[in-house]
Length: 204
Image (tube, one colour):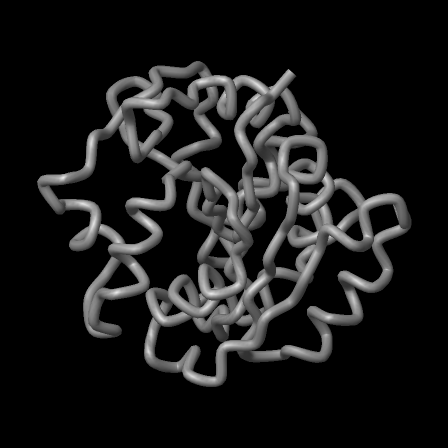
């Protein structure tokens, strides 16, 4: 049983320019990337915040169609009117709406292929004496990331021109790197070719 309170935070605000199609609504195993990720986060998160920007209405409609009404109250959309300024502004907007959660599970929208058991094992890595937990596969760091309220406050107070990587370099952050067997943590679905590779790997 997970004792820590965890909020899921998904960024779904960008243009998906290199893909040529809106990534949150691309299909994976008969569902959209966004719906797939939300449903995997629901069992381990007390709330889920989805930050919108470009194509806001389409994202809100997609979330409204999630069938399991038991979890409907756990999902909230937040619009970032400044999403054009970069991903970090969407992250900052999202954490404004996080409740008193001890931890935030920060998730990109283009990682729909992580299995459900990844999340169950990932949240079990939470410890009281760390602020940041990141999965590693074969020596390569990946996503999603878990961080606590200390890191959340650093992000909230940081300049919009910075990045999460820069903020995470703060010497006050104690990090834990979890070596795992999930190669999907390093996936980055930005182009049509990468999307095709994702679909092909799913049928192997």
